[in-house]
Length: 249
Image (cartoon, rainbow, N blue to C red; front, side, top):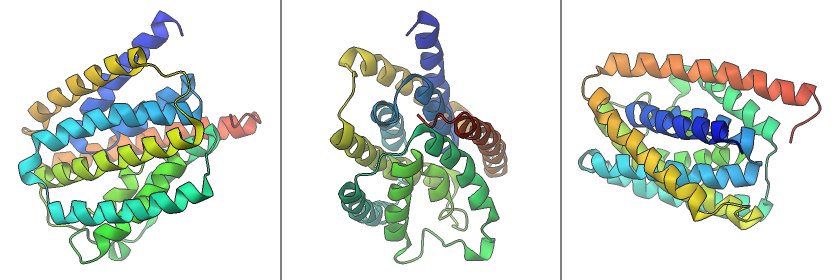
């Protein structure tokens, strides 16, 4: 890669980490979309998991006093069930499928009637969330938007929501990295490739609380929608072009 490419990836890592830190989602959509320009799906997913693990791990540590641990424990149980199932299937998506998944999920979530959206605080829902979100992460790379369906009807404030999402997503990134690494290895990734990326991710995450502390719950939700649907539209076009050109990669 050229110096310009490394610079673009570096800026994207900081920005996406910052966005994830503020909104609890969307940053992963930004980062994965850029990484897949330069890496194959399996390698990109492993690197993406390492970077997001640093981002969400720092968020989880910073907001740990707000985490709802029962939700985390049941989510972990569901995630492990999904991991075993998907590892048995051993499916690796192509780039077109990942981009289309990134683009379609937000609109699919929006189309689901509010009355049909379960509440993460309900009994059994965290387990189901863990199963379904993990499967979607393996197919489309990012599951945070789907997971948000289960938080939308909750009574949790933005800090509790952000903290609980951070800890469950930290676990999810471990599962996704293990899944793709076990199927396709680590590619050409070396410590020199991902160590600086981890540092940049933490820098972006450290900047986020300054904005989140000053943001209202209404502003939090409003900006989340704008960012998510803008990215979704871009990725639908990208995935459609790959299919049109007959190059799903």
